[in-house]
Image (cartoon, rainbow, N blue to C red; front, side, top):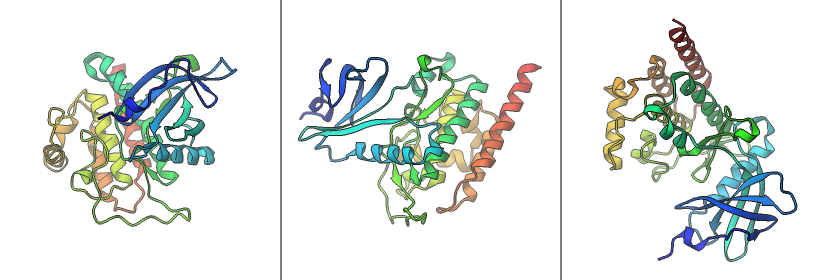
Length: 301
């Protein structure tokens, strides 16, 4: 049986709307991404993502919805890509065109010494990636798939190597209505996300809320900082969930070894919040600032 990616293949030199395909950048279970240029304009390159029109998941629709909301709410554009175009080739595929970015956190970590960032870099990245989560929440969306592969840095050509971008909103869910009121949780929610970084709520099929995105962010930052997560060799979701619960309630140092001690204080902040509560982002930023000061002091000694 053909996969979605096999159904949507765009040859180099072909055209999609006003865009010319230059090369394929990558592909996965949900579609392919291509490097493109706008016809008649050869100075700026973009990324074009395609998804089969018949794809039952329809993840591209949610991605477009999020980036359109970002575009409307100009105040939150600091860590998001520009949606340059969107469209449909009837009977074949949907597509979206967005800013071209640099390497993902996942690729950067794998190429780094000991598979981790330096302490100062990790804390700096932690702040920017948390800002992106907060900005997304402020426009009423949960990400629900926070992981290193869904964050990138900017491009060297654009002088943005120190800027962080959040990607891939196909798993996102709108938790706030237009009038600002919050949607009630479903009695049971299916697993959404990536097992390695998913919050405990996923493992017990509970509706995710804002603090669950931050729990996933924390797991990601532990891996960026220390080079590993203690359940990295487990594959069964139930086993991973049990290990996460043990680390959170009984053995926190098992999770946070090699990380700033301030990381240990984040879980208690999250646990204070209820389902409808906005997380205490400011308190977490203050912990990251303390961690950076401590790191700089150690380096200078």
